[in-house]
Amino acid sequence: MTVAALITAAGRGTRAGGEQPKQWQPLAGRRVIDWTIVALAPFVNRTLLVLHPDDLALAPAGVEVATGGATRRASVLNGLEHLARHGTAPRHVLIHDAARPTVPPSVIAGVLDALRAGAPAAAPALAVTDALWTGHEGRVTGTRDRTGLFAAQTPQGFDFAAILCAHRAHDGEAADDVAVARAARIPVTITQGHADNLKITHPGDIDRASRILGGQMDIRTGTGFDVHRFGPGDHCMLCGVAVPHERGLQGHSDADVGLHALADAIYGALAEGDIGHHFPPSDPRWKGAESHVFLRHAVGLANGKGFEISNMDVTLICERPRIGPHAAVMRAALATITGVAPDRISVKATTTERLGFTGREEGVAAQTVVTLVKSCT
Image 1 (cartoon, helix red, strand yellow):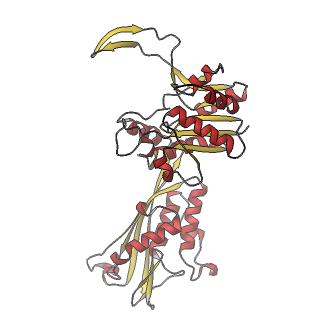
Image 2: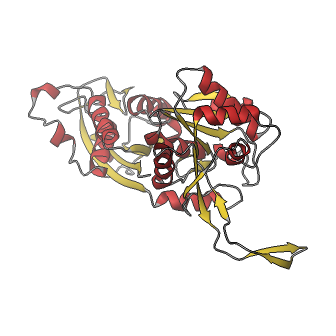
Image 3: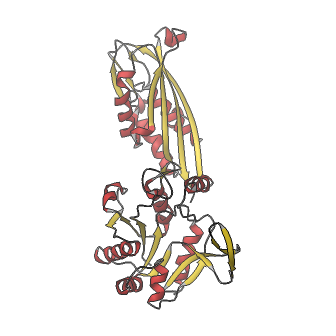
């Protein structure tokens, strides 16, 4: 069964606060929309974002994009038409709000189970359990019977051909895609929603979503430390950059203390030993090796276990060479090696006030901290 995710993200919603629409706001180390894509990805064959024309360049790489319309329904229709015209049309489509980044897997699976069982449409909801009031000017004016009432959620799933025809035939607006389906006399099965399936709408919802996601993330922190002494040479390899100096650093490899300490921090966060465990100094293959080999291996091991590097912090400890003039180039080199954005990489330096072996200019030390994050959604 081919399934496409159509994620609506063309709105300009500002009620949630912030300087940009809610779907692009930061949330637990990513943007809201990135969490939404990740939540749906295991269940679908295609993902299509329907975006405002001004936001097209903000889409993640490798994700299909369509331009939204003046209303939500127009945006959904644009997305459905895109899926129909480009590539093979899916058998089913899940239409989901980008502002629901915390949708649990069980909610998505429930909708798909109903579709697989033959329902032409299915949508999650929660039965209303609170008392319902009417009000005016801050006062309660009456009550309403909550029997048979449900709070609608997304993703709302449909037979693709049926919902495309329904949207093409629909005249005017609709509260959601279930309303469009019902107007076309398509029966809609109610599946189980979840209280964690939060739609970010008001100030404070970003914090709520962050707390929900925080309970669904594996966060690891590792530290690294390395030292190499000076020896003959005309440069030092530090954080992947050849820094001119009257002496070089000695080691079995190219003695890049920054890369060694970063690799050890990643291995430590993964409980995978250290560089010596993976690249024994007794092995002649690593004699004179460029240290980016070690760091790339550590990053690959982390990625293979489902982790992303959230941030890296490197402190180089020495009297000389001076690190400040090279820090920006070092950050760029680390970004190239690890795939981590430069604004998540810190390279800084300190001295030991002429104390100890670094103070006597006998070598360079490096201390690092790395945070790894894995979504468990």
